[in-house]
Image (cartoon, rainbow, N blue to C red):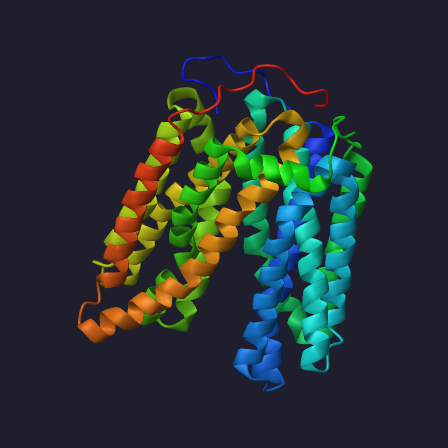
Length: 406
């Protein structure tokens, strides 16, 4: 994000950037076309236990987030492109294999393969985007990547719902094939980015990121934000269902993702011209916390959707700002390692957020204080905002030189 008042360079996405945007749309679309169907097929269709299917989904998440840390470090050693392509192929294999799963062990193995694939391409994809984009354009590119992902998140379930009529096996094969297409797109458009010369093993980059006091503070404080952002899947969904029934999830997710598709890029353009990075990020976290606090007070689905719109305005601002800051913290030769270590905030915050949301509901019910979850989350937002203000007090200056490729 540039300093307010500075001029911006004319921005036209290159073939590599367009390839990353298109691939991100395909990957998110393929993911959300099949993942929601796993629960429908194996629990409702085959009468498997909900706990066993939950174990499968949790294993994929844990595997992907855990491996993402190392995927970034490996990208610094061999370049991001080989890892992205390998990750897409493994994700394809995992999803296709799910379609043929006839036992829990097979489904677990397929989920593990899919998780490994995600762990290989996640941080390297962000590193590649950073490498092929000038510093002054990175916020815009991360916004476009996020928009493409949100569009895929909207389209994926619709396509999956249409395909499931011909069977889960066909749906799984089709969703997996999307990752093959994404791999072809990136294979043709993404250049091989030669790693910068350096000594030491791949873990040396992770050690550098971990011992970078400023970046470590930033990453750990962001755990608080991801506790808040996870509530779209927990507290907010439960509130929507309580107000409008099971059908409320469609409008809820459609509004959240749709607003990101339409507004994220212009919002980020406006902010980068007028608001300093530190202020934008802290303000976005406060907006998310305020929206959650207001959700505890509303008693109609329409009012809840208005709060979700405010919540989405905050979340759509945080992602590209966080990614841009990660690239700013990282030395040029260790971009992948920094993105990998930065994934800790999402992994820990997402896991804690899923657990704490349910615990707060149960505790609030026992205490006769139904607003407890929303009040607690608002306090977490205040603490997170204060922590980010402190963590970014010595923010590295934005780079002004262009990388080799764009």
